Image (cartoon, rainbow, N blue to C red):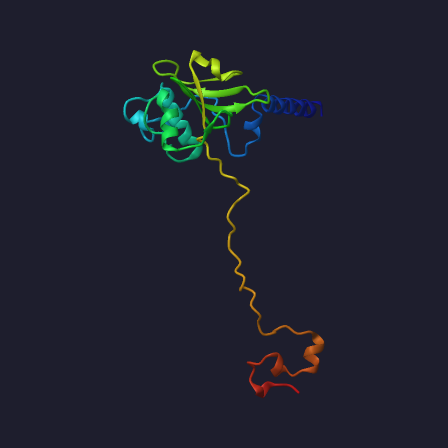
Length: 213
């Protein structure tokens, strides 16, 4: 009994920690934050990643961000060219994705020469990102209270590349047409109706030879 209580307390504490560090992540049904390095997934390799295919794969911030967007959406990102300092302006000029200053899960954080992907936003507003670095660290995560001080670069904002699918809005299995229940000939009768009427009236297709009076 003590062991069960102890395990329950540990579980509750673990959930509280997750909610305090990644509240929006923990409550998002469809979003799974990446907190560990990619391990051969096709989104980050030459199989699907356009940056890897052209010789600019990880470690590289845009190659990683491209792969991460591909991974969370399941479709190839519209941002598929340019370097980290160009993504913000390429997106704005082409209208690929919405953008703004509010951190959101799955958004691409853009600086003057770096991009990263938002993996969590705390209640205090601190932002946790996953990232890669050209010619440097293959993968890491960091939490920042102030995005404007990150790497001493100018912070542009967030590109909202994540397109969550709402599981509560599934298409119906079938559509009921208005004319589906059109008026039909009565074919159900009470015992009293059957007693006072002939079988031929109850069953108009029955041969009159078998009708009962």
